[in-house]
Image (cartoon, rainbow, N blue to C red):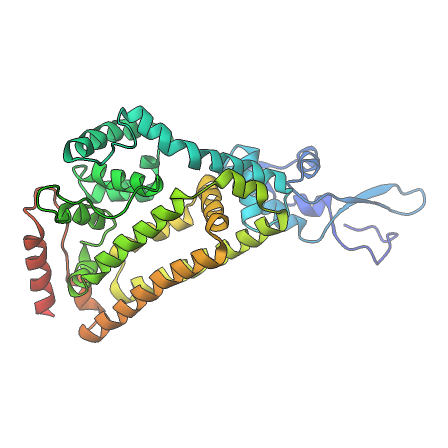
Length: 379
């Protein structure tokens, strides 16, 4: 509490006010810990004010420090590393020295540039040969699956990737991961083409779409009614792969000013909230799990600092305007298709009845088409 001898012009919060109720993993935060954190820049630094002649001094923290400390405690309860806590505070919009954010971004840049090549090297298959033939693809997929399984911090352990693997019953998962790696390496130019017939490998396309949840529930009816969705998605992967092919994340980070980092963070947070709202509305219309959006929404809400840093680097790499145009184009395409489907359907409940699970032993698209047509005709 302020002493009545203090100037009425002084605004802010005392240490006692800031610390009231602050706990990390059930333990109250001490004045010593608070001082350590403000010296590290994790909470705003106080100013020393006089209580009046002969009454000593008091530390006054800027307004909002109590809320800031609550956020720090919440993040610190989940994360033990101070660097990760600092990033989460920064991403949430709290004032934190930018050297914390740049440290995480430097780790992300290194991961972006080094991980795909290391994965290829450890798989025992040369990157230039990966996917060159059916034999090479099978060997590459088998070796890569083993590497991913053994990696303690591999993408396999992310919720979204686990969901994809579950959808494919393990059989098609290596194919999905190979395609994803080709996109990340900047080598994806479209689905594989049969060397004999010259036709696109529809099984590969089906596996990727099934992993994304597009062969389940009401999404299956949408895919059947609008086969152009598959072609649009394939082109989106090609475009994204081209972006990765020219990526130079370390150089981009070095050239990005502090002001540009803050601007990119705020733009991405707004975009993330917009996607969250959009997915919520779509699921209200078509049911939870439509097109695998429930897993996507979970992934958005549970993004780790390294994921957020990678997304920010991508945002800066291609330019906010270009990437925003690309993402808005994809969303607008989906919105138009949803509107068409809504006009054809009798109601959302009908769409939720459609169910076309992916099975690795399925003979082809015939069974999927038949099941979807039956569900659609019942509508």
